[in-house]
Image (cartoon, rainbow, N blue to C red; front, side, top):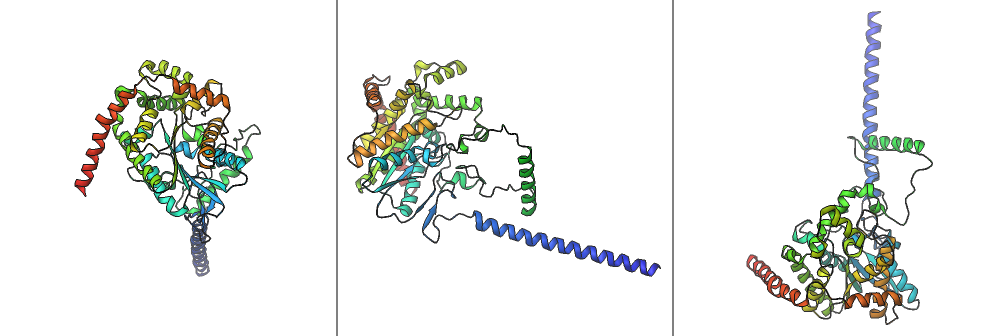
Length: 432
């Protein structure tokens, strides 16, 4: 009896061991399948075997296009920071709006394709590097560079951004696709084995769908996930603090603190001038911050932070950048969008997304209209498409006497900026 009991126990133990081994082997086989699936499904290449660049998979706010430009295409690279990237999906970003307007007006000419290569948390040094990288792949006819007057200078002067650019370095390292809210792999890494990650994630998704209330918020499909305050964590406090920190741009008494940023602008203008000399069409646009456009926000900042609004010259960074461009190369086209935004804001349009600091649907539409109008007039010899009242309003604003005189701006460039640039150049030569 004891023999048979021991025999059964050994058999049971052996069966359990074999079952456990089979389970472990099955788990590892399943793990291998899931990992192979992820590598095949979510890996991104800049150009596939068919010559197609999938910008969406690379986390840019764009779709796909052939690396080799079609013969009937007029290709434009749009570069800049998160304003160029946009909180709107491509069709409603200013790049998409401008392309649609120009194509509608120029039905018998080459199709205009504006490629949105905007990347959050970048500045002018990155725009130059991004152009050099992507121009070698996509062979554009034109480049549009968007400089944000809110933090592009600050990012360089205070070293808020990495010193070296890599293609889409911010979102390449993340596990989500900010363009539409999906993840590269929408299953988060939580357990040692991916099969458990998938099982856990899908059980949560099932429970969430089962518990979902009929009154749940439906996102506006025109906005991408960058517009979601819960995602970007633009709390009310962060929103106002960010807006306050950008006020340094408009205080001439603190302009020296931004000298490194303006020196980078000077160097960037020389790069763009070289593009012009090599026969490339270019456009530099200046994107205003919300504090430049909305008097109500300025009043809130004054009340919240006891800011003295009389200290600020809301035209200062744009005029400095335009003057730098003129000194580097008078041919450089610099299109300041500030006046257009101020006029439309005064007319009651809400051009910035609530507590986000970025342009809303209306703001992107306006920027796209202004850029499209410039393109039609200067590159295609077609009439402007901007309303006459808007053009008249902007012309009136151009006549207004600025707080900071042209002489003071010239003196800053000559006495502070140029020596900084020369010193930097000499240092680079010495290091080489």
